[in-house]
Structure formats: structure tokens, C-alpha cells
Length: 98
Image 1 (cartoon, one colour):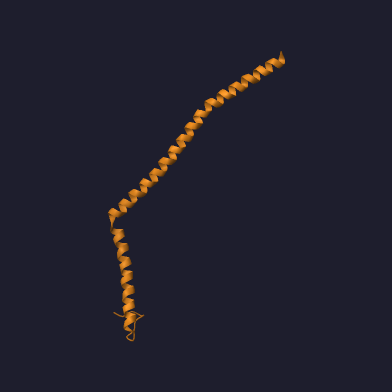
Image 2 (cartoon, rainbow, N blue to C red):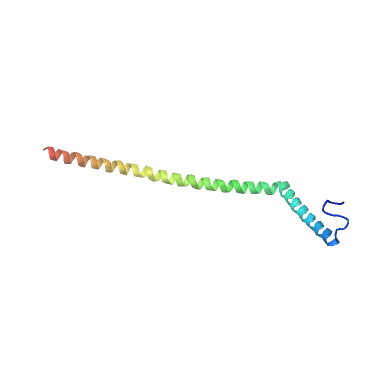
């Protein structure tokens, strides 16, 4: 098996180095294929990812709900304050006119 890089005059050290490089590339390829074929590991990774996203969404929704409740609590107070101001303005106007 001869490649364009190797010639009959190639030193044994160079051939050995090429063999090691080829083995290393083949090892990486096999690892990638094994990772792709490992359905359980991929499923676990997907479940972990989905759980993390769900936690983030739940935290965001919880924060929005807390802010919404704070706004709802502030509206009655604002209405009471507006009513008091309106009554005060009406009394002040009445005193000026009498």
C-alpha cells in the first residue's frame, strides 16, 4: 500500500511516523463514530439540556409573576392616593370659593 507521499526510498522512521499519524486520525474517527452511535448518552445529554432550559424558563416565569403581583398590589394604593388628592383638591377649591 503506497501513498503519494511515500516512495520506495522513504526512511523507516518516516514510515513509522506516518503509521502513527494514521492510527491517531483513525482513533479520533472511531471515537467520533462511537459517540454518534451511543444513543443512550445522546439521550441523556438531551434530557439534561431540556431540564436546564426548563429551569431557566421556570425562573423567568416566576420572576415575571412576582413582578406582576407587586404591580397589582401597588394599584389599589395608587388609587387611594389619587382619591385622597382629589378630595383634598376639591376641599381646597371649595374653601377658596366660599
